[in-house]
Picture 1 (cartoon, rainbow, N blue to C red):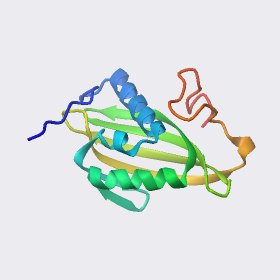
Picture 2 (cartoon, one colour):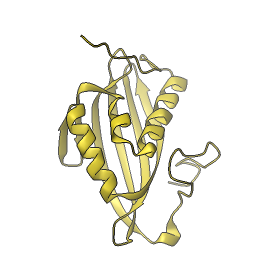
Picture 3 (cartoon, rainbow, N blue to C red):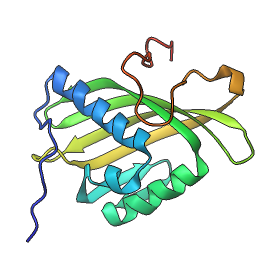
Picture 4 (cartoon, rainbow, N blue to C red):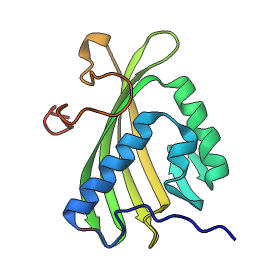
Length: 158
């Protein structure tokens, strides 16, 4: 039987550990590595993402692979909204373009629930895409992790 390594910080969350958990999730998603991102979720994790329902790591990996093949030059910022016990609510925005060069800013909210090992077992996401001009982009950093000195959502007025 394989054991699953804990993913600190662990619940119950404090404000500081909730902020850390949100940043770690942002960093993971900005890696655009489906296999790496899936490891932050329980093997039987349940997602609702827009109108799509995803169950387990086996479905998370192809979901993310499809996502990042469509959403090119993806850059994400997440921000803590609320937390209690083993739950965290975040708001986020990400910018991307399609294969025709049309840019979008996607706004969303997620509700997360974690198990005692710090793995996310539930993820409920609501999001909307807003077309933008390339000149309206606000997320400017090389692909990958957002630099620590890059403004967050509130600082950007989002």
